[in-house]
Length: 124
Length: 494
Image 1 (cartoon, rainbow over the protein chains, first blue to last red):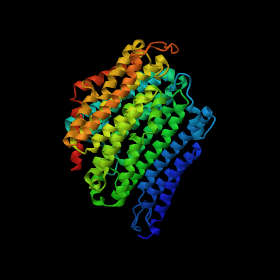
Image 2: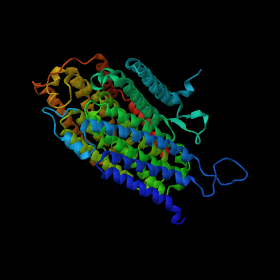
Image 3: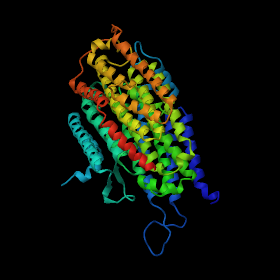
Image 4: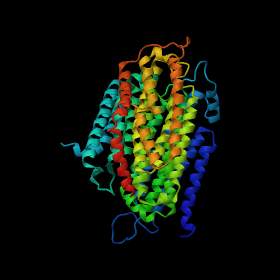
């Protein structure tokens, strides 16, 4: 296999690393979630791309075709997409609540505001 | 209709179906009764499955009658049956407790949603344990994780929100790493069934994607089980979640992640030579030791009991991984037994701390001063569980640590015996901090406790404390099940 045959893997790895970098490097809570979304999306590509054969058709048995693409990764990733949407929705909902409670969506601000403890305690 | 052959499916379906019903009921008492029935049913099913597995061996159940490896297989073997009993048992004890506990910690109109999330989390954890399908593990992992994030965010402090957000980020990274690992294994073996994967992996064991899959799975699962230094999400999550949630998570969530690690290491990678090519044993040993010492040392300096015992959990995970790193039947026996014993001990501690929150308003060191006089039974319970964390004979913690020492001796690692005992001394130090505050200090004037512990909270907590003592004396269930499960795993390795 040549370098061009690995093209989809290069894209996958680039998205993966870029997404993970955003999650780690950004302190804005929304941007972190965007990075997380990109990171998860790269996995969709990792699953789907190898399932496709050049010239392959949908797996419906017919005498006219002999090469079929694998449909299973698509089904798996459909599930993973639902999970990703749910995670993003929950994450955004949490950010809304965090903004109501702290009036900020910057990680550093939030940590600084909780650093000063109350009079007798640091009760949870 | 005979339900017995369908018990593996019902194990997951009962809590999973009860969860949306509690939303439809929209009424907290009805939701509570339904959740109670569902969780007790799950416990009874898990006990029946355990009996069946002990009598007849591994049960394989084809979901929708699609035979494995094409369909999704639910597979109950000695290891998963044992973990199912732990998870469902703790849920059955924590749920009656939660009713009074969330009264003061969660707004009333959200109570029915608490039960929904609790049942979803239970269904997810049971699903991870029972399924024999790699992708199914990921799906159930996310079912349990997403509901866990919501449960943590229900905490009354605003820091619960941020703790939940941090756990969401770290947990999702962990789960995505796991799904990358599963994807690479699927690409190389062409199957998602764990047993089938284990059979086929030997043919591709020398390829780079398989090594990458092992790396991704190890990091991803280690994040979930809070292996040092991937534990940062855990202390805040346990400290700020409602007490009932802390108790349930501390007893089950990280333990199920350990189960997933064992499953992948022994049932999938066990039949290949992958471990011969990578220094996994040494890496796990080092991380386990680092966790045992660093996390226990951090625990000593905490000003809040919930955080203190949360760091202690990270340290105790170290012992479980230490047993795993020996890669011997006795090491695995110690790991699996400690998984159970630590689960019930930590569950009991967090339930008792929930009682302290209810009466004293919090669990900071300042608030628990003189607790021995104000809440004698609760303090006594925490001390008994603390002794189990240290590993004093007569408690559950001693049994599994004893087997861990035996496993270390079997390997001829004398220095490890010394280190295990030395790290137990750190546990003595952090348990002593509670004893000193509770029994040797006078109550502070500015802390006023109110009310008493309702029996619906005291009784379930007492059950778990009693279990901590009972399993310290009668080890036939814990060590017996653990050693048979360990033998089964090692068989897969050969």
